[in-house]
Image (cartoon, rainbow, N blue to C red):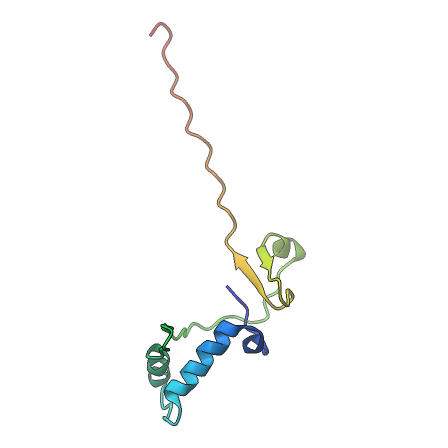
Length: 110
């Protein structure tokens, strides 16, 4: 997961390539519905082979949720080399290994 920032496209050359190609694809065309917007995004390509996938997420997310310092410390966050306060990855925690299966007990004398 990467957070979006107001200046994200200025610092991210991939996003810059992506949004300029999308803008060229729908230039001068009316964006009358979400489906129209998504279709223009999905049909964006470049000479170098860039292809775009897009979906609209309609889920409503609750805002104003606060987490504790302990919860924050439990996140697996890796800060980026450029603008580390803006660019970071949040990855799933490594799953705990289940305990090994107990060894079957052999009856005495076998």
